[in-house]
Image (cartoon, rainbow, N blue to C red; front, top):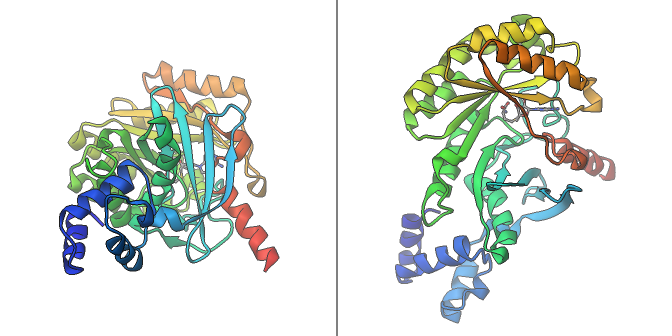
Length: 346
Ligand code: SAH
């Protein structure tokens, strides 16, 4: 609930309007998710709140918690009320803390290299379920007087297919009463659902757009990302470029490097042809091998050569800084393993 909704709901229960502000303060500033501990609210009212409302981060069950050996990445697998599980990842950068949230439980896009669709059912997450992925971490950070300051919607799922909940959650996180995170510190990544990019443009918020491109040859992209058959990549690039123009934000193109598939000099040249003179940057991601899928990572020399070809053609490109590889931080791997174990157990 946003503040006005909570105020109305409280009024209907005969509670004072200012209680809503107090509750927001407990929930989103102090990260106290238990009404019983909200000490500036009377006992009878606390009991009424307890009976009428639930606070999601208090109810999700952390079924796995993994820390990377460098201590910079923490990954949680959260079990939701229906037994589905989602991954959420906290990363500590020199500029602060960012969280990578999932937008759906599972994924329906069937990208050939991705683990998100491997096991388990797929469904949209609610606004609350997306917010819970951020607030579980804020609760851990609060004692250090730290907070999450950056959100990337790059976990499992296709955000544009759960548009209302994803952007609803981001708008909540932007609110000063919510998490006060600037839109400029939020990024939504899509496999290329054009109507979603257009809706994002209509929203008119300076949220960054990332596009998972991964191939610039039609046949190969069809094979790697079946979504390309419905939304061919040149049209996706055109829609993203329009977004860049209207938002003033540079678009990031994600390009996974797959050994002997999309990592040749010719591929780099083609990529440069598409992106040159655009408000675009390329983020090269050496693939996280998913054993079930049979994809491998090119060697370091090949990766650097690919980068240098892009740079030679004046395309701004970087190699993704890897975090948390030792804790399976890539895309649905933990969730898939959990769903598999659960299936065996059942
Ligand atoms: N559905 C959205 C967001 C989720 S995926 C999208 O497609 O953009 C986030 C990013 O991780 C995407 O670029 C996706 O292609 C990439 N990814 C998926 N599997 C991967 C793997 N095994 N190794 C590296 N990146 C992967």
